[in-house]
Length: 278
Length: 300
Ligand SMILES: [Fe+2]
Image (tube, rainbow over all chains, first blue to last red; front, side, top):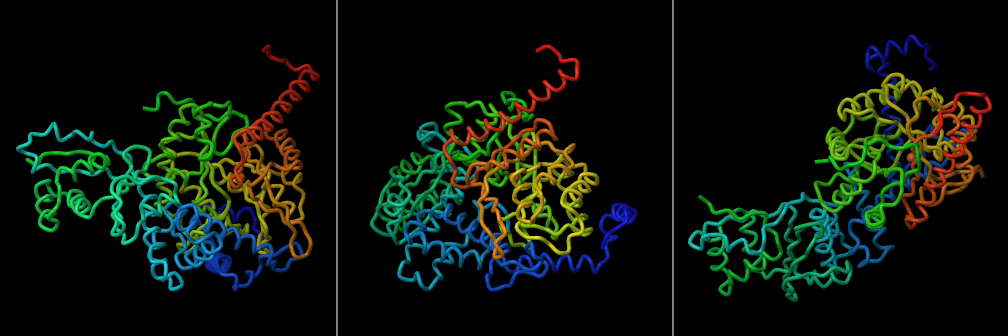
């Protein structure tokens, strides 16, 4: 295997094309074999990966197995602290291990790892009796996306006073990019207060909650929305004019209060701009 | 826009890894610290508090940018999207140094979140060289390559690690980051001599040093198996090895890596001060030696 300096120079000139195909293939196999056992303890220590006596060492290769699983489970615990606390440490680590094996990360930014966790929990038979966990995971994932989302300056809550009242119906509301709406049949705001020690503003209906998560400055805020306000917000976020959105919501919710709904969303500071459509 | 920032260049002093636990202490007290090192992957979101804090801290301190996810040592092509995100962080914060590892972490689209070892062969040498060329060209900066900590030995290796690194530098023009704790861990784990390793290291290319804590264990044969845990103080023999290293490399920016069981700011800052002490005594010893030789010493 040892190479004369001349053959090294040749390879520099050829930029890798000088390497025999056979060497490239066995090199790739080496990486395949080392990878295969990292998340699967049943796979034996790869050939040629040895300790000081020249024999494969489970304990040594096991350091990598352990680092991989433990660090990815830690990353899940950091991203989903409320789910972690709700199910307890041991259960969470076992659950996250199953998740990691089924959906390993595909890129290195771990604050972006776990997007499928809510769905995974929802389809995990042993947790069928805890249907709210799926929604808590969805809320935590939304929180993360908002936390790391783009910065934008929201409009002042009194922005509408600067708009000609006759043209208000044509106003279009652009949300700040760091915002999400999460729908749940469960009292998520209570769960959030207890497990994340953060307050949730707005209304808190017992069931059928909608939570608006947004980040108007550095802090992520959560606001409980009534169903009609949430439907209205969704239409505005979608680009409907105030007039269109109000009309559509009024037809389904006969007690819809437009000025209250606007007040709620403006004080949550979820809009980056309000423009009157020409 | 960045006019109020301090110069990007890292001083030859102790520095520490930037941790969210310490953001407020740093901004409130503006402690005397040589530099902060950031993991590129922690600042890849579009906005939010991490960037808010880092932007403020960068005004007062130089930073070094340390990537953990490029998988330079892997057999697969580099992840182009990730490479582009590394460049974005570098462009955003203008780090004084930019480093990555002689290791791999991605294979077949799976990201393992660990610095995995590679055999040192002609094939892996070419892989690493091609990857570093690509990184340096794309990011538009010189990259420092860090020596890894290893727990296993590859039978197929045909290069010593120090020779492998020397060859990479020759072919890519990259610089080196010498992790002295990794030297101690790898040499102990493979039954080699950490001092020999330092003595053979191509020190003329070193631009930064890492120090960190390791956890002592043993393998199934009873041989020592040190784990590069970064969860405690730097061990005494690693401090001695550091002093030996500094005598060869001269004073270098020196990072204390403490990534798990993160201590209070005061404990972390104390570790960085110990690096300053070693650097100072090296400088004094050099001055004394040069005085005794009768060299011209410029007046202070
Ligand atoms: Fe290091």
